[in-house]
Every structure is written in structure tokens, then in C-alpha cells.
Image (cartoon, rainbow, N blue to C red; front, side, top):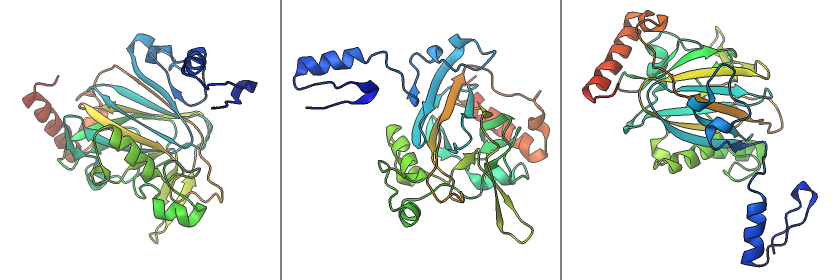
Length: 286
């Protein structure tokens, strides 16, 4: 017998008929962390976005993970609802998973180590997987990566994916598995909503969160597979494991173009976007 004390009731499911009836009775139950199906039914749809264009809507628990494969031109918005989310993100070329986020090129090509509006997320092939199109947070990190199983075991006593204190990498491994990828396919991730800066002496300065309600928008510059883990940042100084929900919405839009200022921010940026366009044209992707 499975007993569910949620919502103040006890459900008996000793038989198949009882289990089926109980499941059907919960069809309209809403919880804090869940995907919204269809995506257009999201109660948190971004202001000004036609809900018929929304292709992905989800609140990821703190901690939690998710994943999606999205078309070129999709706009993805991450929102830190309560001020303690940290979105660790890895991006792949959806058609060739061997092409994936490369943090060295992501910092080298734009001559900028700090993520913000207009920043391209590059692959190791010198192509732009996605661009940070808008940012109200400014607290991000492309230096430290994600928490690991060993580190979480030392700090919290556990770091397994299904423990109370999962490591970000363990969550990314689950997201990767859902897309047919393994641990060896995971490169270092970028982190949104928790900031880190480098001091003149090379020390890493924790700048933390910008608070609740801030957002970051990405534009998919090619078809992408995206993995997301919501878990504390490796440098988070809090003694306790604290992670709050991360809200995601994605909708059909347009890829960026040479009309956008980030395309011509430097010769290196221009070449990266031109390289991307050449690849897409050769593959017949509009």
C-alpha cells in the first residue's frame, strides 16, 4: 500500500483499480516545480509573448535538472524566481553532439571573461551555439564550472543525484542521459545568476546573486540541445545547501543577424558568426 499524505488526504492504492483512480484524480494537480503541458498553458508566460509561440515552459526545482532540443532562432528565458537559483548550462549542436560549448573560446573570441548581454556562447569549432540576448542579472560565471560528487560529499555528506544535496554535475549527467549523452560528453558549464570576478591578484571574488526576479535570455543560433542543472555554485559561501526554483520559457523567434551590434563587436566575433552562417547554409538550415 502506498500512502500519500499530500494535500491532507490518505490515498489507498492496494489494487490496480484504486491506483488508476488515484492517478486520474491527480491529473490537474499543480506543484511548484513542473513542466507545463502544453507549454502555452504556463501560468507564468512572459509578458508580451504570444503564448502560441511558447515551445517550452517549466519550473525546475531547487535542486533539479532539465533538458531540451530547440530549433534555430528559439529564444530561451531563464528566471531566478526567489534569488537562490543557479542555472548551470551546457549547449550542444543538436545535429552533431560532438560540437559543444567551449568555455575557452567563449571567453577568448569576444575578449571578455564575464558573461552579459551580447556575449556569444561558442563551440570548439569556432561557431556560435547561442547568444546572450538580454540580461537583467549581470551575476554570472564562466570560470568555475559546477559542483562535483566528491566536493559535495566533503561539504554536505552526500552529492548523489537523488540525495538531498545533489552535485550539479550529477544532475547534468542525468540530463545528458535523457539526450543519449554520457559523462564524457559533458564539457565545463556556464553558470547564470551567481557571479564571480577575478581580483588583481588572481583570487576569485564571489559576487553572489542579484536577487529575485532577474532574467537572462539566450537566442539559439543553430539547432541546439541544452542541458540545465539548478544547484548551488561551487563558490557559494552559505553553510547550508540552498537552491530555489528556476523558471524557463522558450518561444519561437528569430536568430540574431548582422543588424545586431554583437555581430560586429570585434573581428573575432564577426568571423564566429560568419562561420556559423556558412555551416548553416551548407546544411540547408534557415
